[in-house]
Amino acid sequence: MSFYWALVFIIGHGVTTENVEWVETDSGLRYQILNEGKYGGIAPKVNDECEVHYRGTLADGTEFDSSYKRGQPAKFSPARVIPGWKEALQLMTEGSKWKLHIPAELAYGDRKIGKIPPNSDLYFELELLQVNAEEPPTGFYGLLQTPVFSVFKVWHLLLIAGAIAWSVFNSFSGATKARAKHILVKTEKECLDLLKKIKDGQTFDELTTHSICPSRSRKGDLGSFTRGQMVKEFDAVVFDTKIAIGEVVGPVKTQFGYHLIVVLERPKENKKGK
Image (cartoon, rainbow, N blue to C red):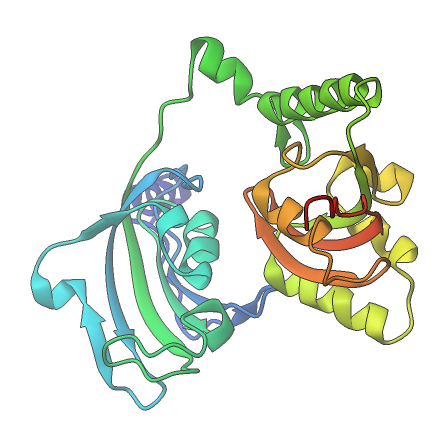
């Protein structure tokens, strides 16, 4: 077969590999590429709807789910599935077929789900049939969703600017304020790893370099703020008098990610009328 016709065959039918090595990602996900997929295939983004066929088994080979047996592909976005699938789907391209080994912590953890016992590693054959790419937002909403820095978009900066403006306003209004610093990371695992490093002797300030929040340039210091300026999960920590000043608290989950929080100052409780 000439090189030209070999290339046409590959582009039209995909590349099938046999006896390939397992690849392991930083998260612990392991995969084996059974079929590379079509040349130039689309890789899904986190909110793109994907049409897939799959077969899932436990370590002993027990099958717990199969779209093949149902005779109909499943449809969902990477954002709606377990972390192991979420990562794998965004690495795949249309037409590819992978074998996955997903550790329990990237699957259902210590939960029992149907036929799946707690703390179970899961094994899948996953075939990405089609990607229905999400249309990018337009107009004013599209502007708000424009990336600016790392995971931060325009609407994040507007929110921060609003918080700063509110802080300036309250500095003249005599409102009682708290002060805190934090480290913001994307995953709970990263947060727990940082917490362990603190317990092992590293300082909070040293670890603020891991933060994805712009406040890392100030060692995570968010300055002074009043109740209601931050998200409710943040307020629940900062204004809780049971939490000691200087105590490291976390992981605290918010819409932005996972936080380690240290309260630096807190307004005294108003005890009048008691």
